[in-house]
Structure formats: C-alpha cells, structure tokens
Length: 330
Image (cartoon, rainbow, N blue to C red):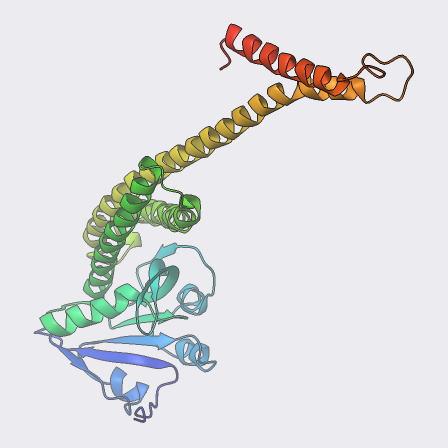
C-alpha cells in the first residue's frame, strides 16, 4: 500500500484544534503549511528530522525564534528548556519505538510552543508521543498548545511507569537466579537494565531542575498560564523520578549481591586449590629429593627402595593432613 503524498516536508502528522471547543481534527497529508496556518484555532505539527527540508520549513514558521529553531533541529542528546513571553522550547527525554515492539532505548523529543502553534520534531519514532496523539484524538478536548505539551509529559510519565514495572519484573528474575545459586550469568542481564535506569534517572533530574527553574522565574518572563502547567509537569516528573531512583537503588544492591556471590565462588575455588596444593607439596618434595642425580641417595642400592619411598610419600601426606586438621584449616 502506498502512503499518501505529503506537501509538508518531513510531516509525520498534523492536527488542527478548534478555537472554542478544543476539538481535534487530523489534517490531510495533502494540506499545505499556508492552509494550516490560515485556519482558526491552533495547529500541532509533528515532523521527522530525517527529512533534510525540515529546517527550512521550521525557519519560515511564524513565532519561531532563533532559540526555538535551534531546539527543533538539534541532534543533541540532553534535556533543555527555555521559556520567554513569545515561545517555549526545549528537548524532552522519551523512549524510542521500533516497528513491532517497544524499546527501552532513550530518544529525544524537540518542541516549540507559541500561542497559535506547537511544533514537535524527532529523529526516531518515539513511544510517548504516539500514545499522546492517540489520547488527544480520543478525548478531543485541548484548549491550548500548552495543554498538548502537558499531555506529552503525562504520557511520558505513564510510559516510565510501564518501563519501571518491566524492569522490576526483570530484576525479580535476576534475584531468583542469585538467591537460588543458579549457574547463570546474572551480570549480563543486569547491566542493560542498570544502564537504562542510570541514563533515565540522570535525564529526569535534569528535566526536573529545568522545570523548577522556570517555576521560580518572574511571571512577566513566561507565557500566561505556563507557571501552573510547569508546576504540574514538575510534580509528574518528580513522581516518576522517585520511582526510578528507588529502582536504581534496588539494581545497585542487586549488583552488590551478584558481586558478593562471585566473590564467594572465587574464594571457594581458591580454598579447594589451596587444599590440593597443601596435600601435593610434601609428596612433591619427597619425589624431588629421591629424584636427584647425586651419589649416596638413601635406598638407591637397597631392594624395595621404591616401596620405602612410597611409604615416605604416604607419611608426608598424612603429616600434611594432620597439620591442616591441627590448625583447623580442614
């Protein structure tokens, strides 16, 4: 099946929201950017950065400042947030989405919000924004571009909660292997989960700090109504940040348990090797003594000399065993 041709470069989807009711209408792919901007209400444009024509399109959009333009076309992998009276822009962390399954790989959603337009861009398909679009299309009650941004963060919170549940289940399986002394490589399974947790926790802390900084700014420096939305978003991100923080602590303790288990196994192997060395060292000394190519060796000219040497070997083993028992090593 052929996809419909789009007249907007890099368009993934576009939605038009009615000015009074806030009802959501999907824009046909054949629409032009001029037709969209001429409509009443506000527009949500979601663009893919894989199209090289997208930067030129973004540069011509009304209300997009230099900072907003840089935020929308950025390929940087870190969270950012900038708010002025004219535009709110930045980068939010998200999770990539494969064609047939959800991924735990970190992705990035770039956005810019004005009073009549919200533009979001991404390089890879993302998990939360697709869910946010489905929720908005179903509810159909969005009154401002800021509410679209709030819906994106809400769906991101739900995605993180789902991911936390998935990682919790994986940690439960690893714990079963650790405490049942199963012969499995738990570290290989734990490492990817810890890497995802650490990266997510770091980005969430950054986003939380950025939102808190915005909420402490003067009211005349940010758009009307954004202060309340920023506080709500901050509360949501703080909630999931606590969940991820507790998950990080659990993964750290589990990693310490795995290291402790590996250390116990190594010590047990070294103990067995040491016991074998202690038993074999005296016989080695006896055989080394009788193996010297020197004159006048004991039993060299005596019948049954090998038997006597064997007796000395057995005595040395018995002496080693007695010493190990005497000093409570065995």
